[in-house]
Every structure is written in structure tokens, then in C-alpha cells.
Image 1 (cartoon, rainbow, N blue to C red):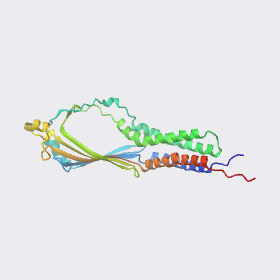
Image 2 (cartoon, helix red, strand yellow):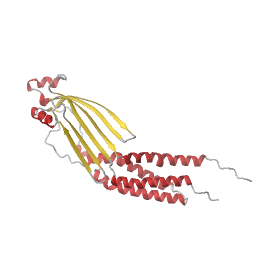
Image 3 (cartoon, rainbow, N blue to C red):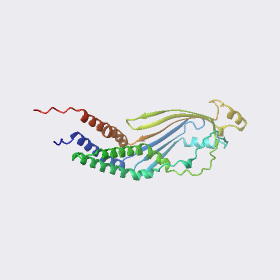
Image 4 (spheres, rainbow, N blue to C red):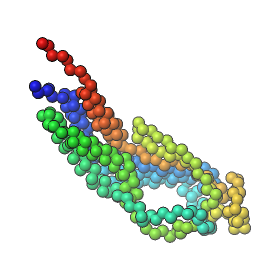
Length: 279
């Protein structure tokens, strides 16, 4: 005797299709993520100055905004400094040209298409479930993998892709020299999974060689002169990424609707005890 239709799975697939339909709209119209860097000089000659950089990315654009506090203080700092530098102690052999990242523009073109393919697979899976076609789990696995890839692209690869699309070229400054010594840095991450905010709060301390008198340059390089020295600079900052609301909702929807719910329904169907037939 043919079994009745799996109403629980049908309902699940209907909800999945609704989520995938809204995903198409969100990818095309809403902000994917906002990158923020906010730094403030709290000690030293540029004290009171700061800078905030905000990058907002959606399907069509990647708009950056820069806000500078204490512009005159910055100018005074740069005017007062000299061009003293020393050879860098860094031993990194990293070659920037060897790092190839897929540019953001590629993801801006691909993700809307992938969202449409995911919706088509969702509709197909709904139809196969309605007519109880065998081996439909293969389509389910493909759909699940595609949704995972869309999430990875939005959460990780697209932000990295903004860096991948940059052409840094060859600057006028030598990479093997530095203008600060005795650098110290400390920080802590701040993670808000509910709102999709990842931040790193940091403090850096150093001594600016451009503010050191040449008569005491060797002494400052050899040993930190103390925080009351004119060359001491301290900076507080926050660097982070704030994901669009739909990205956070997509992650939670995958966890609940594409991962936990199918497992729960499959488990219930396996362990349920059928009613005994009446003789």
C-alpha cells in the first residue's frame, strides 16, 4: 500500500523555498556588510586626532567614507616630524604578489545567480517530495551545499575579495624601513553573533623617530625613553565588520531549516512506531 505524502518534509521545503526567494531579493537590494576602522590618538603630539573609515558593500557598489578628526593636529604633527627611519627588523618573506584573492566584483556578479539557482533547486526538491520521487536526497544535498557556499562567500570570501581587487602598486616608501620603534600592541576580539558584528579592539604604543632629536636617536633606539618622552605615541582603535541583517538571518536559517530540521524529521521517521493493524 502506498504511504501518504510526507507532510512535514513538504512544509519544510515550502519554508525553504520562501527563504531562498527572499534571499534573491536581499542579495540584490540590501547591504552585504560594512567594514569599519576607527582610530584615535590618545597620547603624543597627535593627541585628540583620529580617523574613521567606513566601507559599505552591496551587490552593485563598494562605497567608502573617511572622516578625520583633528585635521590641524595631524598637519602640525607632520610638519613637526623629520624623515628619520631605520632598517626594519621584520623578517617576513611574504610576497604580496603571491597572494591571489578573487575580487569582490566577481562575487557581486556570481551571488545573485547562485541565489536563483538555489531557489530553482528548492522548487525542484519540493516537487520531487510532493510526488515522492526516490533519491531526491541528492538534490537536497546539492541545495544544502550551494547554500553553504553562498554563506561562505558572503561571510568570508566577499570581504576578502575587496582586498583582492586592490592594486597596491609600488609605493614611494621603502618596505624594509620603519619610522617607529619599541612598538607594543594589545587587543581583544568582540563578537556579537546575534547582530552579526565582529570587532577587534586594540591599543598600540610606540616611539616616533620623526619626533626624536638626532642627538639622542641612538639612545631611544636602544631603549624606550618612557611615556613622558616627546616621541611617545599611543593609539586606541577598533577594526571590524558588520554583516547585513539578511546575512545573519541566512546563517540562522541554514542552521535551523537546512541542517537541524531535516535531521530531526529523518530521525523521527526512523524511530516512530507504527500503529498495529486491527485484525
